[in-house]
Image (tube, helix red, strand yellow):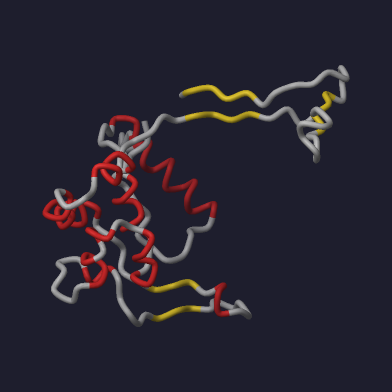
Length: 167
């Protein structure tokens, strides 16, 4: 099981050799992320962790004060102005956005008083779903006009389906 609480709190990715060295070091000192048993973030926790304040219409109205109200205990995660680093890029949308990293424990705690205001359908959306693995056989030619022409298996000439299985 992956560690859902661990995060890489840096704005730039490490070099691959540094990441490999870190993995070896962690293995030597006995760090085992497979021992972590904390649950993944719920959907609204995830959205509040990654969306900027101007995207607040994408979350339930009951949770928007967390992003918009100046008295919110987590308002510092949603700055109105922030630095960007183009890091040699030409276009501004390619920039690295320099904003605070979200402490999910702090965010979860701040969300608690607002959760009772969610509508039943919002509460239903804010649950963990099932994991799926979707596979595709590259030897299958997918029809551009489904319902008229079936997908064709280039090896056998028969129609095939994409397989989905639960984790």
